[in-house]
Image 1 (cartoon, rainbow, N blue to C red):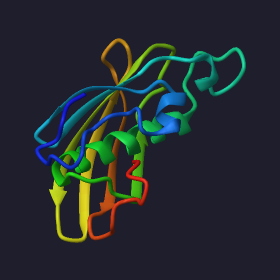
Image 2 (cartoon, rainbow, N blue to C red):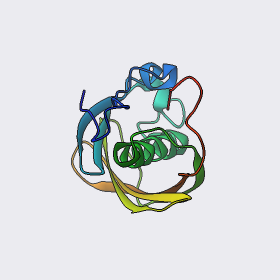
Image 3 (cartoon, helix red, strand yellow):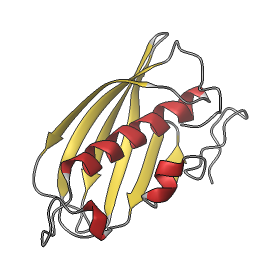
Image 4 (tube, one colour):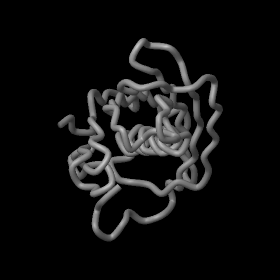
Length: 143
């Protein structure tokens, strides 16, 4: 989709089996800011007969979006070393949008802030994730 400022990394969700499984979409990448969309699936429900997302789905989306924001600036994938999620309200049935922004890019740590919104645009969760910028990229080149 969109290429980072570093020619070595083409940001795409297609290289990860997990991203393909959840049908994650990369909407926009620009200057350390990433927008992703997660289409609703029945398997994401927190319980049978519920129309709420499971919290683990939200935290995974926050982590992935933050990783892409940092990778878009570094030109390589980075491993997560810390993740904080604040759940603000239930995320109900419908697509989710994550907007992540790289806020710190240091020699050893990169930090991204992420906002997660529901299909109506309501803020449902926020997160901050830290990534190791000193480690080597994954051997297979996948996120």
